[in-house]
Image (cartoon, rainbow, N blue to C red):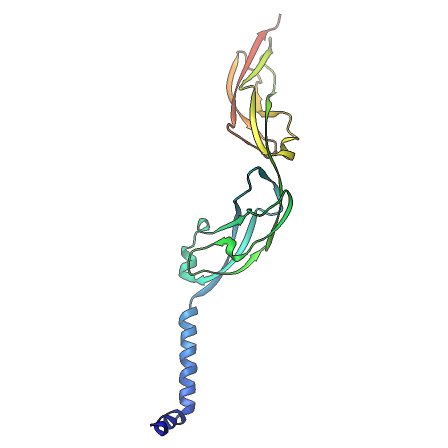
Length: 218
């Protein structure tokens, strides 16, 4: 029995080695056939922000994810199927440097992550704050000849905003979008959007009602 087994192993050894090598090659060929790479630009999301803290700023808002998968899978891959979620459970007030790892990336099955660029994000945390600020109506142009603007008001006259304390400390008023009153000859009641002017805050409303009253010149 042992001699028969040894003879089986020794006979046609070259042929057996070639067969094994071919089998391995075919396995790799079948497994990786159609494998292709692509890159996706994905916005960063955050979770578990500590109560009482607010993100003041971050150095990057999107990351580039290089992935590999079968061509069919990548063709079916949609941008909204990929998410990058950063856990903020352990952050502190001030500057935080957080690595972006493969575990931060949420992908459908069958897709391999090759690279993540950048590999870390720098964020600044500040105290969460809120305040009430007056609304300033912004006008441009002039009424029709013989009229002048007697009064301008908004409803509400002030709004509550919230966000990072350092950012809110810079805000004294909230302006409306510019309202063109060129050539008007009667009172104007209009809904106007809030103009954040690049400032970062949240509010429960993005419009106010503006009332412009005219008077005839004497």
